[in-house]
Image 1 (cartoon, one colour):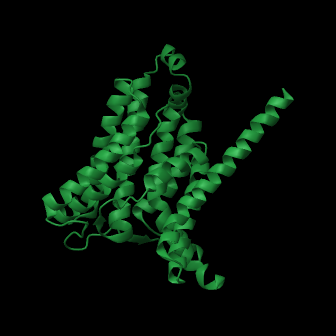
Image 2: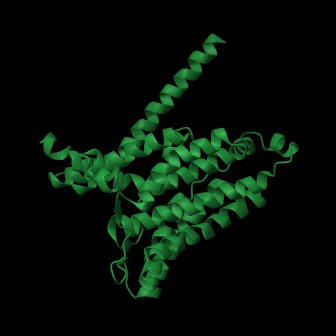
Image 3: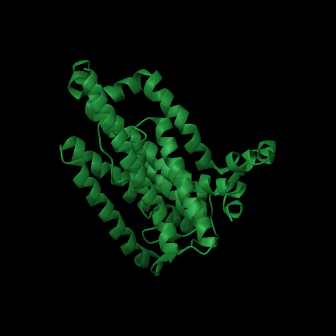
Length: 306
């Protein structure tokens, strides 16, 4: 039975499940480094998914759809930036409010714009299709997993080393981390904390919007009410598990992608859908508890050696 569930095609499913979460998590990580706790990723993914489908229906273009998805999520991110950065509000409260707003707004606009409830598929079946890299895609196993992704899939994977280089090897990245860790000290050197925080929040909006576009037009091809299904919260957890480090965040997202893909496989083996749907969140909670215990133990050992 195990051989029927864990095979080469499973890992291709892992990559499809991984991409939306990884895009959103990278945005959340950038915010974390800038000192803004970004928990509105769930709402931004949902608005991005809706904007992508709406734009695809009107324009028939996947490029336009992805652009509109990014812009729609940026509009929400500006609410967070204005409230948390400019006005000094609580980012957590604002993030929860944005998530509620996104769920209600998309549910309201769906029947108003398209005359349907629950789900909508754009005319022409516009999709963010896979982009095979020629001979690389023919490599057994690896080619199917790594070289047969959508453009947004390649973008998500390339952003991991690119953001690492940006954060730890460039002056702007150093300033961004300085703003997040010591904003007053950064301001004494002529760095504007507000400017960097705004930039980080807007970047998270762009990436979360693209995550929504990948989810609606790359993975399934339709918009369904509340289709983000907790992926934004998983992205927040990935940032925490990965300690806001690009490669740590990638590892945490791979864990989620594997549990989601594995859960779908178990459905095919007759396991109840309620159990398989809960599997990614159960695994995430277990890992959080383990990581918390190990971190607490490390702090205790460190304190004992001082």
